[in-house]
Length: 87
Image 1 (cartoon, rainbow, N blue to C red):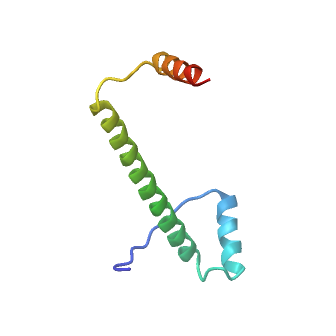
Image 2 (image 1 turned 180 degrees about the vertical axis):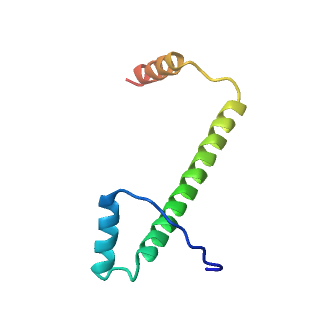
Image 3 (image 1 turned 90 degrees about the horizontal axis):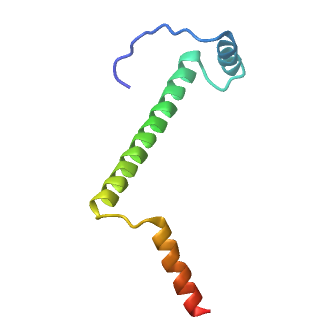
C-alpha cells in the first residue's frame, strides 16, 4: 500500500453510524478499512466511466469523420420503399 497518511473526514451522522455499525458487526476491522474499500470502489467506478466516455467520444469522432450524414427521413423513406417492393 505504500506510505500511510492520516486524514480527518467529515460526514453526515447517518453515514458515521452506518460505518460504526459495520465495524461493530465484524464486517471490517476498522472504519479506515471501510473507507479505503469505498474509495477503491469509487476509483474503479470513476476509471470505468472515464474509459466509457473516451470510447463514446472516439465513436462520435469516427462518425463525424466518416463523412456527411443522411437525414433520417430519407433513410426511413428508402427502407419503406424497399419493404414495400418486397411485399
